Amino acid sequence: MSLAVSTKIQKKYSKRTRKSRELYRESLLCFPGGISHNIRHFEPYPFYTKSAKGKNLLDVDGNKYTDYWMGHWALLIGHSHPVVASAVRNQANRGTLFGTVNKLSLDLAYAIKDAMPRAELIRYSSTGSEATMYAIRLARARTGRRVVAKIVGGWHGYNTNLLQSVNYPFELDEGLGLIQDEEQFVESIPFNDLERSLKILNTIRDDLACIIVEPVLGGAGCITPQRDYLHGLQEFATANDALFILDEIVTGFRLSFRGAAHEYKLEPDLFTLGKIVGGGLPIGVLCGDKDIMSLCNPVGKDKSEVVCYVGGGTFAANPLTMTAGLATLRYLKQNKSVIYPSIDKIGQRIRKGLEKVFSDSKIDVDITGVGSLFMTHFLNNNVRKISSALDVGLSNKDLLRKYHFALIAKHNIFFLPEKMGAISSSHTLKDAELLIDATQQIVQSRLFSRDE
Ligand SMILES: Cc1ncc(COP(=O)(O)O)c(C=O)c1O
Image (cartoon, rainbow, N blue to C red; front, top):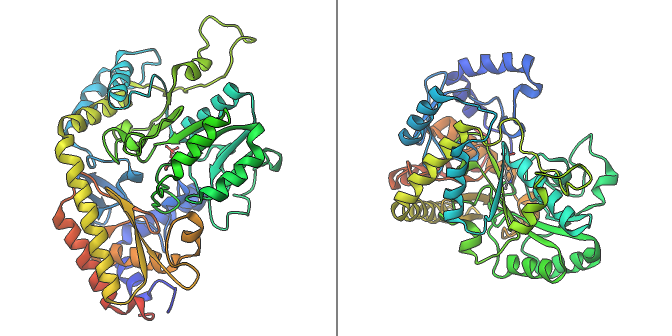
């Protein structure tokens, strides 16, 4: 089976994305690799988006795509939702960055606390990477210990501490510029293997500050937790006076309005939010237990007394993000009884439909996911089922890339190649059928058998 993207499909893509190709050439002269976020590149070059509305992206050449990437899975109610767009427009006229405290930050905090009461105290930042960086700093401050346990393949953003065992092969460094001395204070444990995880954790228990985990591995390949895995980690952390931190940057307000902690009955000491809670604008949120969060309260203390510096940054709690987030959470709260069952139903239909298409054609896949998240994994002799990031690393990623590219080039359906898909409230069951049908056509084409 050829692994190269079919030249015929590439030609088709090149022909209809001429302006994008030109912009990509220019971008190479401005940005390393032509991009501003590593994962946004795909071969032969990414199309350039001109506008986005609802479930659609429109590129500079006039091609319209049904989007399943949805702004890094952040846009649960679609691109430029009228309620959010109008609130942001109005707020822009009143100021975009006050640089002072404002009531909007309080309104959004109440909306978060209403959905997730474990957010006793909250600190905003501008990205999820900052929120997770602060979370582990706070855990080290609270416990006086140094070691952070993360999941093999777990993704918590580009903060230096957690940039370890992210990409397959996991034992290799994640790139230049990372200092090995720091790495000794981060330990990686295998997702969904409680026995091995506890064995590793036991070796570091005396210096363990926290365990940080995504309830559903997102970047690593849309992997759901097996029964009792997350509870086992939580129990271990509690029994050993370490903190249990849930990174809900993808799952918060997506798995349900109350997030994964509620769905899986978990009680994290700290948790992080991002993406959806910013309503399409930049955000990270650190939330949790008030005693722990109070360690970063600098008010009335001099330098020797400030326990833990958790910043926030120039753009933290800016009125534009607060407004977009608030409009989104209010809309979700008002419509949650319709939105969540609907996106979950579409997710279920897609998972089932894709499974059938592939199994009818004797192509071995595991379609993972939960609710409105899903991903196709092509299996081989090395891996028969997907339950960890290692399984994803061993699966046939080249075939996945080809499949996603064929969807883009031939069917105007956009997945960021190799990444999981996310459904928004602007998708419909008809979109699910179109995706299943497109997959059927791709399977029937020669893509999966030999080069075209
Ligand atoms: C689970 C998780 N945590 C943290 C982050 C980092 O967020 P940001 O890209 O806003 O820095 C991401 C981003 O994809 C994520 O998926």
